[in-house]
Length: 471
Picture 1 (cartoon, one colour):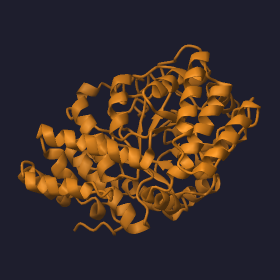
Picture 2: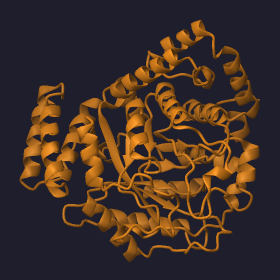
Picture 3: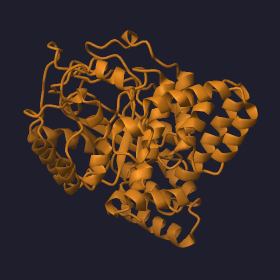
Picture 4: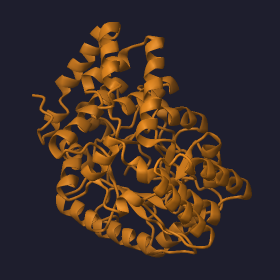
């Protein structure tokens, strides 16, 4: 029985409800009066439910699709302006006891070198990331109670926050580790993490169990119910995601939205972020072995519809995707991207990009400076801001500000302030010149004169060596 308020995975991600939604979508994909009605509802910026969204995804009318893209672009601007938040992943350990068939870290892969960072190695990786200009990290580790216990993760978080190299500082650590207990989530919350991220991989239970044949991750319910335990443990912000290509994308899309609806129904707060990874080549993994791969056009449509259906959420795209794909979906809803990522354990200290321990092939291999310059020349403000997290604007407090549009009053100036830090400390001369012109232009777009004046004063202070201002 489908019940979004249930805490049981098979009730809030109900298989029969997903199938019924897809059947409803197929029956109405050419029903233009209904589709227009759904789009009109979407224009109210309150989102759509999984059935309405499934109809839009099934629709193949080119004119309607272009309307979706135009609406997604406008909603993105309304909620997030032209800011793009920057982050980098930090891989702590590739030891893993699971048998996930799509991941090179799976236990049966005996030709990938296994590595776990010491605290000194964590320190060196963080310094390398700070020297690029990063302020926000997402830490990653395989599931291995012996090599990667929660105590190790907590020690790494403490080490990361403690490092202040030159003008560098990591101000927000998001965590992407295996599903765990309420007690362990409470420990992560007390350690000061930002968002807890956990990809579902697939919501299709039968496929999930087949793709995770061995190890603790085989338990579908325990994994799917993780976000509820995280929020019970005090973590305000959680991030969802599926690995597109493992199962039929229409099934995953409907279920992903059902998960967002469940979090809103139970906790009053939907997902802080939704990630949209696609399966990519890696050691021992060949994407063609999975027959549910999606085209760039379908991928773009999914990104646009996630923005329309969950307008408040941050949307994340990684360096799995090429520059061209990332450029396309930035317009359609993506609000966070990684830059200069290395998906191997200890990869940032290496001069040459190591490939023997990568979790996936990196398509966009540009430096952070190159990515920042590219964003600015496309009219975006690269933001290294972490102010909301540090000011306690998380969970329902962040969502209420975001949904009302009030978040723009602090986010826009904060983005400019943190961009100025990057330009002063890390940028190439060309990037600095482009960035300075962008800041001067964007300061004029701060609506409140008092906030604009304070932002200008902060930016002048940064030029004279001061750091870490925020609204």
